Length: 321
Image 1: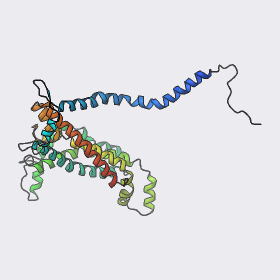
Image 2: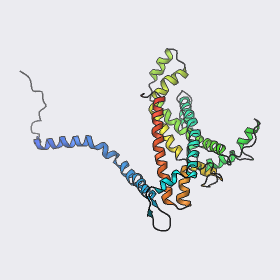
Image 3: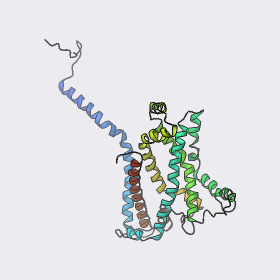
Image 4: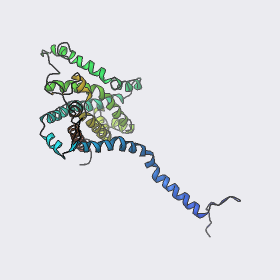
């Protein structure tokens, strides 16, 4: 005969009626299923108000001939068709992608190597790990002033160093490639340390037993880095690449300050980015409809290029084929 081992209520204790027990069970299930959505809802509510609504409103403005003074007129996609034949817009696109490639690719490689160095045993590791953030907390205006002086034509440090190798003075602000290189150097100096800390966080999540087993098998540190660290760091690499893509295609402050605050990026528009061209049309020429069209084209460029980078990095880092 089987024994009933179910717990029984103590003598004299009040037993909840079945209806109330069912209600408590349902509330408990709702708490488990709905609580996570309630916790993250403030972010999405703020994003709806300050992100999604401005994005939709900007698209509506881009469909109008909208100037600072006067009524706006609905013109459909005419701003976009005009944009596709605008030489100044495509020049800004070329500048943006040029500086993005020159800045982002070395930046990510240097950040990965720096993170690998910071992941080793050393004295005062916290001091060095926090020290790589100093360029980021420095005022971008101060950074631009220093780098503008470094890349000065007559007395800049860059030309002073090139002089020892027999290279003539370079007018860094006047030429396309030189201005790209100067702005990209400024961007790399500011953001390499930040990305290295993200890589470092991913590296410290890798079990040390894998490195110990590889060392016993005779694998060098370089081989351990390429065969263990990089493959297991794939999600972090994808994340950092996408974030760097978004930031690189939105480049605005560094080239603006490097050109002494001129929104056209120089007399030949040699370093004007898409974000600068958008600002120039919207707030200098007061063509809000056309500036909004530029903003939406920039949004689509970032979306497409981020997806492209995601697929490429997944494959290169050992993702699904």
